[in-house]
Length: 338
Image (cartoon, rainbow, N blue to C red; front, top):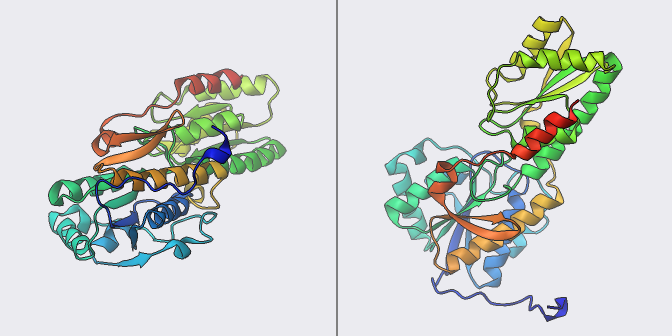
């Protein structure tokens, strides 16, 4: 179909009769969350639906920290990191009483459904709200770890990889100048997606991920082989969830070779910054799809993107089913490190 034949102002069917929805961001922030908020607000506004913005996630919801937001309120936000709605973790929301209070506020505001942008912890919070109080919940995957089943990528992952890779490139320059080994820890408490992609893109000599909790002794041989081939420095990437972390790997290298080793933990720097285009586009598509899902009468699902198409996965499956790293990419990392 020619592009000129696409109607850009099509009104989506609304069999669920949604007149007002709420949106919040929860858990750790991820670059692209603002793009998702923007997409939710502007899609809903275009469809004649009011949007209630909940500030500070579930912590704000059980306190009634809410306000109507419109298309102009999300102007000039697509390029911003973090979340304009703010985020927080809430112990109160883990209790039935806390969720009941939040549900009461949603009913007072006349909300027909809630869109939750976050990770598996956030989806747990939305899932129990729906189970206990019948409020339809749609999840949008916003987490840099890329560890949610039901979507090829999560919002924030692409930017986190680029941020970590930029740091690795800089540290490689320093490592080469000082003929030093750098062990770099990237985020990924339960998943090695970031570590694996950074290792391949950064030309690392070795990578350690939680999905393969192997003994670290082998890294000594890897470093020694690199030195024998004339490499004056080495880069080792470690996901934070790997047993012992970067420090454990560094200790093994120093004990086995006596070589000077430096540990660099990138930490929360990977959460911030301007989202790259891939995260902005993904967030925009998923924010739009979340609104349409509510209008279609869906509930208790996460909207994702699989093989380029919008997908819908029951919230409980996003944490019950395991999303593995790419074993092909893992093999590639090993092959190219020689």
